[in-house]
Length: 60
Picture: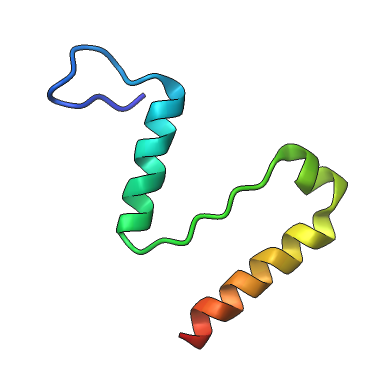
């Protein structure tokens, strides 16, 4: 877990994940989130979604 200088305890998992997500987006990353069920149950949709996001990113 991430530790922050102004805290004496580690962040709860959900809050830590939120911080990581926000930091990545602020750094310019595109974060796509998929559930296990989506990846296993509809992998074609997951691949199509990743490809569409990548195409939009590359197009500018």
